[in-house]
Image (cartoon, rainbow, N blue to C red; front, side, top):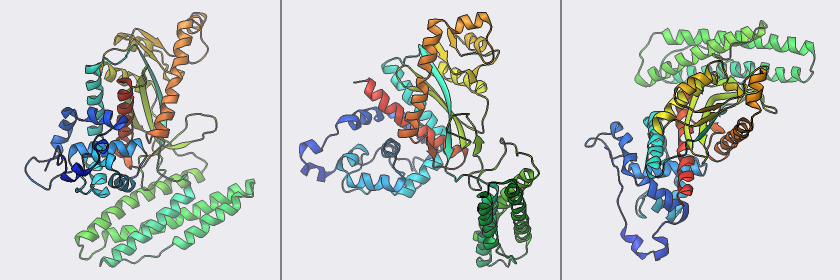
Length: 448
């Protein structure tokens, strides 16, 4: 059952000193912004107004998620911090006699609401801000980054060993659940092979490379044996209670991913690089992909590609999170269209040369953009060199580099360095909450 507001006030608060009954500073300013009732509308479709257990008050949930992102807290730590702080309790509209919502309740509600709801909250925040004071859209800069998934550095041997171990654990649980399964636990053997790879790699010779590929092939053979036994368990006979059916469903997914890991290992052993667009780099995070941005000091990263567009005030006007490494040129046009719909047509749009293609300037100008500042790839003609060396062009390019600082801030203070929610939807939720917290802080500072 939907609850917009929680209990207002508490008789115990009457005994507090007057200075402790009011919020101050940043919390007071953000509290005033979040009081806007339009932020409640996106939650209505997810709850019944009359049936079911009462939900967390929406005003409390919004404030809890802001604190979580703003201070980089986990769900458990968030609950502890709010429980122990009078000011945070007041900010979250939780009375002294009222327990703070359980961390599992907040976590499950976040997953249930999904990424589209947080996207809508961000749109409503910008709409409300634009109504109070029109947002600056005279200049917009765009850049991309990688939001890493919460996984270890993937190797073929590590993924194969992990798959063998997890299949054995899952088959053991199915056996305990009452379904007769004959299998061999090959975890110890697989780990011994994986350990021997490390010993060979330390030799740094051509012979070591050959031996590593041979050991990886042996691990793939072990994984195939485990998959064969797991397939027999899926099609085996016997009574299947609901817990066992759930275990078998998880086993089926694990088998599918293990088969893909085996194919990738065989492909690499044959001297061919598996395609990055479909490469599996984690058994529990199937949407993460290897992405190389060509940055010095940073090799291949594993996660999701994200795009950010901000204005001269540092407000993020648009963001998006994508699986794999799609072309930058295909991301810019939709972003400008969304910004145009939300706040109006930008006067100037600038991005790095990775966004250049033959039609990008024409396409953006057609939408109403006055000036497009994107350095051209390849050798520029004399006419193009004259354009790119003009003072206005150079100034816009220098201002564009500030978007990298914006991304650095998102990674450092808003959780964009690594997403701790799984799958593409989880990464979208994580990044969207980071943008929501960032824009809240920025907008309140601009209003001072």
